Image (cartoon, rainbow, N blue to C red):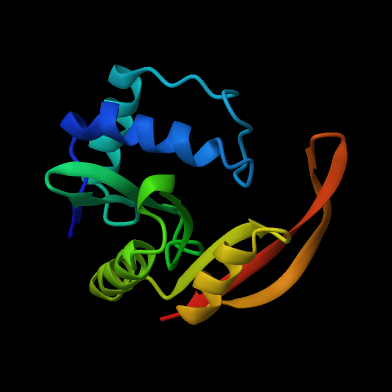
Length: 164
Protein backbone atom coordinates (compact mmCIF):
# COMPACT_ATOMS: atom_id res chain seq x y z
CA UNK A 1 0.00 0.00 0.00
CA UNK A 2 1.13 3.53 -0.79
CA UNK A 3 0.06 6.83 0.79
CA UNK A 4 0.51 9.98 -1.30
CA UNK A 5 -0.90 13.42 -1.95
CA UNK A 6 -3.89 13.33 -4.28
CA UNK A 7 -3.71 14.90 -7.72
CA UNK A 8 -6.51 16.17 -9.88
CA UNK A 9 -6.21 12.95 -11.93
CA UNK A 10 -7.47 11.01 -8.88
CA UNK A 11 -10.85 12.75 -8.76
CA UNK A 12 -12.91 9.95 -10.35
CA UNK A 13 -11.38 7.27 -8.12
CA UNK A 14 -11.75 9.36 -4.95
CA UNK A 15 -15.39 10.07 -5.79
CA UNK A 16 -15.95 6.31 -6.15
CA UNK A 17 -14.44 5.71 -2.69
CA UNK A 18 -16.55 8.54 -1.22
CA UNK A 19 -19.70 7.04 -2.73
CA UNK A 20 -18.83 3.63 -1.30
CA UNK A 21 -17.97 5.07 2.14
CA UNK A 22 -21.22 7.04 2.25
CA UNK A 23 -23.13 3.81 1.54
CA UNK A 24 -22.14 2.74 5.08
CA UNK A 25 -24.62 5.34 6.38
CA UNK A 26 -21.99 6.45 8.92
CA UNK A 27 -20.87 9.59 7.06
CA UNK A 28 -22.26 13.13 6.96
CA UNK A 29 -23.90 12.50 3.59
CA UNK A 30 -26.34 9.64 3.28
CA UNK A 31 -26.09 6.91 0.65
CA UNK A 32 -26.49 8.43 -2.82
CA UNK A 33 -27.20 11.90 -1.42
CA UNK A 34 -24.13 13.73 -2.70
CA UNK A 35 -23.48 14.28 -6.37
CA UNK A 36 -19.91 15.33 -7.15
CA UNK A 37 -18.70 16.22 -10.61
CA UNK A 38 -15.17 14.98 -11.39
CA UNK A 39 -13.97 18.30 -12.85
CA UNK A 40 -15.32 20.26 -9.87
CA UNK A 41 -13.63 17.84 -7.47
CA UNK A 42 -10.38 17.96 -9.48
CA UNK A 43 -10.37 21.75 -8.99
CA UNK A 44 -10.88 21.26 -5.24
CA UNK A 45 -7.92 18.84 -5.13
CA UNK A 46 -5.78 21.35 -7.02
CA UNK A 47 -6.67 24.08 -4.52
CA UNK A 48 -5.75 21.86 -1.57
CA UNK A 49 -2.51 20.82 -3.26
CA UNK A 50 -1.29 24.42 -3.23
CA UNK A 51 -2.20 25.08 0.41
CA UNK A 52 0.06 24.73 3.44
CA UNK A 53 -3.02 24.48 5.68
CA UNK A 54 -4.97 21.80 3.80
CA UNK A 55 -4.26 18.53 2.02
CA UNK A 56 -5.88 15.47 0.52
CA UNK A 57 -4.08 12.16 0.79
CA UNK A 58 -4.99 8.85 -0.80
CA UNK A 59 -4.19 5.28 0.02
CA UNK A 60 -3.69 3.14 -3.05
CA UNK A 61 -3.14 -0.53 -3.66
CA UNK A 62 -1.94 -1.70 -7.07
CA UNK A 63 -2.35 1.89 -8.35
CA UNK A 64 -6.02 1.92 -7.33
CA UNK A 65 -7.28 4.54 -4.85
CA UNK A 66 -8.95 2.69 -1.99
CA UNK A 67 -9.05 5.39 0.71
CA UNK A 68 -8.76 9.13 1.24
CA UNK A 69 -8.11 11.53 4.08
CA UNK A 70 -8.91 15.24 3.77
CA UNK A 71 -7.17 17.70 6.10
CA UNK A 72 -9.12 20.94 5.76
CA UNK A 73 -7.33 23.89 7.31
CA UNK A 74 -8.00 27.55 7.82
CA UNK A 75 -6.19 30.67 6.69
CA UNK A 76 -6.89 33.13 9.55
CA UNK A 77 -3.88 33.19 11.86
CA UNK A 78 -5.94 32.30 14.94
CA UNK A 79 -7.15 29.11 13.24
CA UNK A 80 -4.13 28.22 11.11
CA UNK A 81 -2.83 25.74 13.68
CA UNK A 82 -5.74 23.32 13.30
CA UNK A 83 -7.21 21.09 10.61
CA UNK A 84 -10.48 19.21 10.36
CA UNK A 85 -10.13 15.63 9.11
CA UNK A 86 -12.45 13.47 7.02
CA UNK A 87 -11.51 9.89 6.16
CA UNK A 88 -13.12 7.33 3.92
CA UNK A 89 -12.03 3.78 3.18
CA UNK A 90 -13.65 1.59 0.53
CA UNK A 91 -15.57 -1.23 2.21
CA UNK A 92 -13.55 -3.89 0.36
CA UNK A 93 -10.36 -2.61 1.99
CA UNK A 94 -11.36 -1.95 5.60
CA UNK A 95 -9.47 -3.74 8.36
CA UNK A 96 -6.14 -3.64 6.51
CA UNK A 97 -4.46 -0.85 8.54
CA UNK A 98 -5.07 1.70 5.76
CA UNK A 99 -6.71 4.12 8.19
CA UNK A 100 -3.76 3.78 10.55
CA UNK A 101 -1.34 4.54 7.71
CA UNK A 102 -3.34 7.57 6.57
CA UNK A 103 -3.49 9.02 10.09
CA UNK A 104 0.23 8.47 10.61
CA UNK A 105 0.91 10.21 7.30
CA UNK A 106 -1.32 13.19 8.09
CA UNK A 107 0.30 13.56 11.52
CA UNK A 108 3.75 13.80 9.90
CA UNK A 109 2.37 16.30 7.37
CA UNK A 110 0.87 18.32 10.25
CA UNK A 111 4.20 18.50 12.05
CA UNK A 112 5.95 19.61 8.86
CA UNK A 113 3.35 22.35 8.32
CA UNK A 114 3.11 23.75 11.86
CA UNK A 115 -0.32 22.22 12.45
CA UNK A 116 -0.85 21.71 16.18
CA UNK A 117 -4.41 20.35 16.37
CA UNK A 118 -6.15 17.61 14.41
CA UNK A 119 -9.92 17.42 14.87
CA UNK A 120 -12.87 15.46 13.55
CA UNK A 121 -16.43 14.48 14.31
CA UNK A 122 -17.85 10.96 14.31
CA UNK A 123 -21.29 9.47 14.84
CA UNK A 124 -21.48 7.87 18.27
CA UNK A 125 -22.66 4.60 16.69
CA UNK A 126 -19.58 4.35 14.43
CA UNK A 127 -17.72 1.93 16.68
CA UNK A 128 -15.01 1.05 14.15
CA UNK A 129 -14.28 4.72 13.46
CA UNK A 130 -14.13 5.62 17.14
CA UNK A 131 -11.81 2.67 17.82
CA UNK A 132 -9.47 3.79 15.02
CA UNK A 133 -9.42 7.41 16.21
CA UNK A 134 -8.73 6.41 19.82
CA UNK A 135 -5.99 4.03 18.67
CA UNK A 136 -4.40 6.97 16.85
CA UNK A 137 -4.46 9.12 20.00
CA UNK A 138 -7.65 11.13 19.48
CA UNK A 139 -9.76 11.94 22.52
CA UNK A 140 -13.45 12.72 22.79
CA UNK A 141 -13.83 16.38 23.73
CA UNK A 142 -17.59 16.58 23.71
CA UNK A 143 -20.89 15.45 22.30
CA UNK A 144 -22.95 17.25 19.69
CA UNK A 145 -26.38 16.09 20.86
CA UNK A 146 -28.93 15.18 18.17
CA UNK A 147 -26.47 16.56 15.64
CA UNK A 148 -27.59 14.45 12.68
CA UNK A 149 -30.96 13.11 11.55
CA UNK A 150 -30.45 9.64 10.06
CA UNK A 151 -33.24 7.25 9.03
CA UNK A 152 -35.81 8.96 11.21
CA UNK A 153 -33.58 9.14 14.29
CA UNK A 154 -31.45 11.85 15.81
CA UNK A 155 -27.83 10.78 16.22
CA UNK A 156 -25.19 12.29 18.49
CA UNK A 157 -21.73 13.05 17.17
CA UNK A 158 -18.53 13.14 19.14
CA UNK A 159 -16.02 15.94 18.76
CA UNK A 160 -12.57 14.33 18.84
CA UNK A 161 -9.11 15.86 18.66
CA UNK A 162 -5.43 15.16 18.92
CA UNK A 163 -2.67 17.65 19.64
CA UNK A 164 0.54 17.08 17.71
